[in-house]
Amino acid sequence: MTQPHRPRPERADSPELAAFRQLKAAQPELAGAVDMQVELFVMQRRVQARLSTPWLEFDLVWLARQLTEGQPILRFGEIPFEWGEFRTLFRQVSEVLRRYDLLEAADATHVQQLIRAGRPTRDDVAAWYDATASRSNGQPSAETGQPEAVGQVLALTARPFLARTVETLHQRVDLAPWSRPYCPFCGGDAELAILLRPGERRLACGRCTGVWPFPEHACPHCDNRLPGYQTSYTSRDGRYRVVGCDACRRYIKAFDARRSDRPFMLDVDTIATLPLDAAALQRGYLG
Ligand SMILES: [Zn+2]
Ligand SMILES: [Zn+2]
Image (cartoon, rainbow, N blue to C red):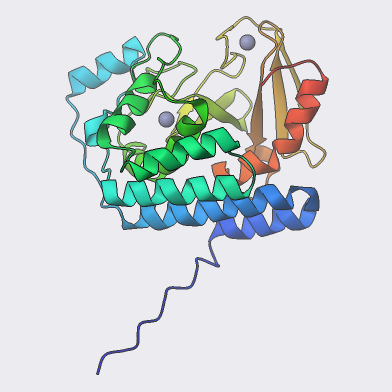
């Protein structure tokens, strides 16, 4: 006799979901943002859990050269995309963003048209991925020809596929030769910084969730490395910090691991630091 199928409990015990619940209780004004992030998180993790583990073989000479020259190492063809799964998630992500009013009407229509035409295709995603992954030596990302909102939906959709690949690389690739302000895996920008201990800082990629070392007194926006150009202030609970650069007037938000009772969680900490953006703008910094 077969057992009746019981759906797996909805990861109610996942540390991220517990942290989201805590955040919502502590800061009820973030409830809407937390709810949306939880919906995206659950969808992304469901896809990520189903993907097989890619095993990438690197030519060590090639790898060393990429890292030294500042060129990201994760090539599009090596990411385990599953296109049916990708398009379903693309539709789901766009529905969530529309429901939370994060897609303007014109962008929502554009996304709808793409979906009806059976897109995004592999070529669409390759163009989007390579525009950023082909950057080197601080050159900005190339244009993809898609509206920014489509890029946002693509980024949220591609995330579990990229994250699945990058989680297998963290253990295997020595990132010591890399000290660029953008991601060594996919070329994405830093979303948050992580302060581990004095003098030791990491940056976390908003695109693939990769984490890499970056000098504490350097600016991830303009790469200014002269001392004395940073102004930093902490959140009320001491867990987060805003670090402003007085050379380019931009800022990065940081998770202070020394003052937190849990490890860094990109999905949660991105939302928890939303109030710091307003504070940074008030002090005249740009995001
Ligand atoms: Zn990345
Ligand atoms: Zn700067």
